[in-house]
Length: 182
Image (cartoon, rainbow, N blue to C red; front, top):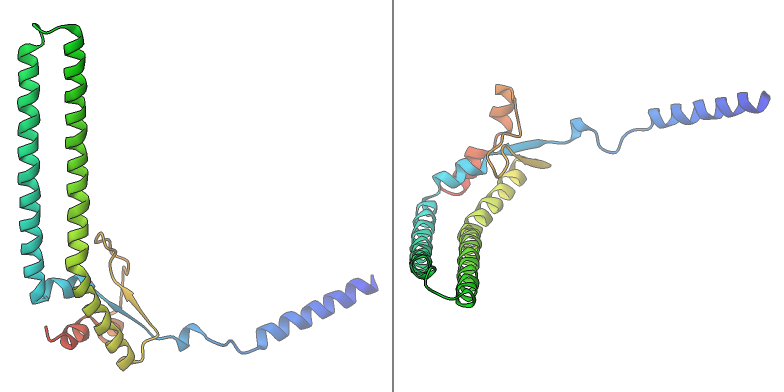
């Protein structure tokens, strides 16, 4: 019983000491800003050129795919016309060939989509780097420890509410635009 009392007393002192010890960083010591990069991107003059290049690229890929799809459709129609007059082995061979052509077409679709994403990333990278550099500059000038993005890449809102006073002081979106001369 005496050991239990001593252990309880030592535990109580340890907890009290931990609670009394100053924290190295508290939430009050951190300064957090936030920014809306999508709004900045939309206002960047370079974004129009990026969108145009992406549209041209997409149209070119769509045209290539449409041509391949027409070729595949033509092959299928020719097969359907001949199917009743060709031998069983010729029919199997032709169906295998058409299945292979269809798989190639699907691969081309997938490849075109990947190329579109790569093209978008390649064209957007310099703009995103400019924005990030400007965010860093503004955050350093304002003494911010963290800067949060207000939305996800899919457009979902992350910060649900900000009081007008906090928004006026810690929303650095317009400061970043100023830094970028937008």
